Image (tube, rainbow, N blue to C red; front, side, top):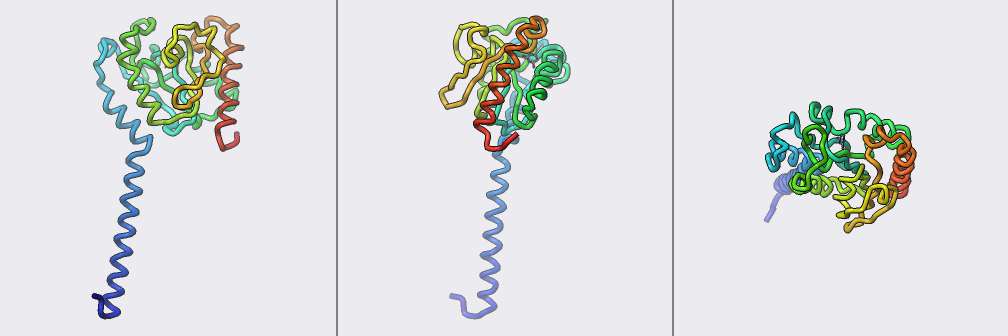
Length: 224
Ligand code: URA
């Protein structure tokens, strides 16, 4: 029972402090559980991964980079030499073509996140082995789960076949729009490295990325 004004004032002051402390805790909890934090936590967790023999020959594990809340994830195959050395995805010749194409189409960097099916470089850039994909795929799945993109653009045969769980060829699959079980849209295209060796493929590569942009515009509330 509160009897006098002074006690009443103190009690109101106390309630105010409790309320602001609760708000502070809620805010802190939110910032601790956001995508950037969860991605960082995952990266720390897997940075010394030894699930497959590729750890023996890697310089760096290439986790992925970009906006942790991106609407679009671009999924490549595996790090190459430059990526292995720098620990960043798509920084070599194929990356230059990819990033220039995205810039040309005015797809802003804050709209996407880039990752690979394999986080470590296969020696001599050989094709990923099924058992390596099986070891590494759960990491990409967790990245997708954290980022919650609306669109996935898979580059090349390996990422496309893995994400669609199919053995059909990339020439058949590219440019089509697939809806994945959780409603995410997947648009496959050629791998930019393949476009370097087969310049005629660049036209379809650009056409597919344009489709990705159209989907971005359709699904994004912000304008370009
Ligand atoms: N090729 C890929 O598939 N990923 C990279 O990060 C670089 C080249």
